[in-house]
Length: 604
Image 1 (cartoon, rainbow, N blue to C red):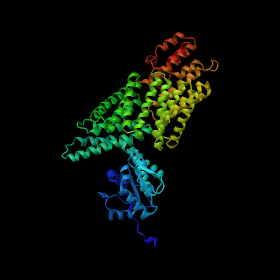
Image 2 (cartoon, helix red, strand yellow):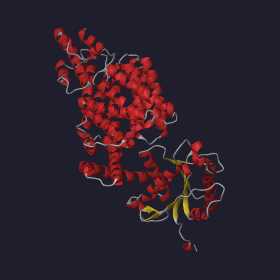
Image 3 (cartoon, rainbow, N blue to C red):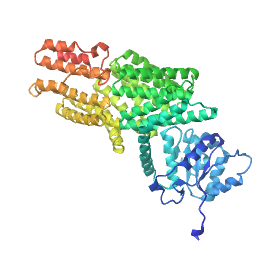
Image 4 (tube, one colour):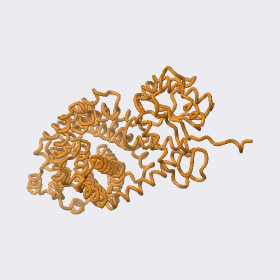
């Protein structure tokens, strides 16, 4: 009778080549340790036991290719509900992996076999026996990249083995991780304080010291990756500071930091500098980025061909170029961006198939395109850079269709291409590129309404569309878009008051509205006092290129109002206070304004 059938002992048999032994052991631990959310784990049936998967089997023997499968392996395969094949070029060449797959199919018929891709491309990594009679590739959990991708790979396998929907499991796991994020953020300083105290206690055992260091760096890694990514997407700069301080407290006062610790500390400094820049504190950001560059340069000098260290140095060069750009030093920005581009090319040359390295090359192309457009006003050169970057961004997004960050990068690529087309006079092309950007952002916000980066990019898209309408002479449509964008920016300011970005965007909507109104015939233009009231105080509200650019834009518009009222001397006095024309750049760094032309309009 069916009721007398004994359940199989194992959830799955893990098949792998000796080359992938370490990964097999890691995957075994991850799968067996994973506890499903309570609602999904009840009632326990099939591959579940008390909220966890039943045991999985992976052997630890060195198998001899001249002998048949050991009896213990045969019995383990017979007692397994499914099979996980760890796919790599080594597995594709392994006779033993092929025999294990064939035996599983002989014993279990159509029972599922899951693929875990750990190295190489599918065509080089899937064993022939796994493909079956059809020349097709099974859907694989992708473990080739560290971080969130590996977590998703584990969830895919757990969902398959437990018989639950992946989307539901991801959602439940995300909720659980969010609770952990908030708990870690709230207790981060205290946790790191404990680690810091422990670090100065006399350690009598070298092994104990190493275990302590590993645990501390592991906690730091969680906070610099998972915790930071979630808080950054939510726009919580206040909690990001807590995370930064917690990790920093571990390293403060330590004399003998390991190489891995130095790499981690450099990433911490870069993260802190990025947050400082968002708050408008450019001096603090510069200090962080400089210290990070010293660390990464020292590490790279010790191992000049290590891809991880080349990547870390590339990030340092980028951040230095970025902060110099924000401070209005175009020459220094170019040096940083060109150094970054050279390091990105080294990464691509070392591993052309690595999508992450291709992304670095795409970022470098975008930076060089920005320099060509903003500094030289060279739209054709800029467009070549942006078109090349866009191709790479599209490939990267297609390779990971659920990775929001990659789609944001693609959206940003369309934005830069649109700016270049606008400068070149191709308004239809610019409109098409902005429409492509908008479709991506709408999709991201539909799946994650709290994605703060997508919301910020959407504001930029609204402003750009308004500028295109104004360039076509459609002032009424432009003003309607500007009013809506301003209201949206104010709402974001209220939700994230520490983020200087939203304040800058809100102000930009006001200024472009005045600029559009000034283009109207005198009979349709608001009274000068109303325009002045919208402009408000033109003095910079903080340091940095964006604040100077806003102040200069406000000043130019004020001069235009004065000139329109017949006060030419007042207009000239206002124009004498401009910063931007002194940089020599063709266009302003943030909003691409030609201040020479803007000042000429105020002098007529």
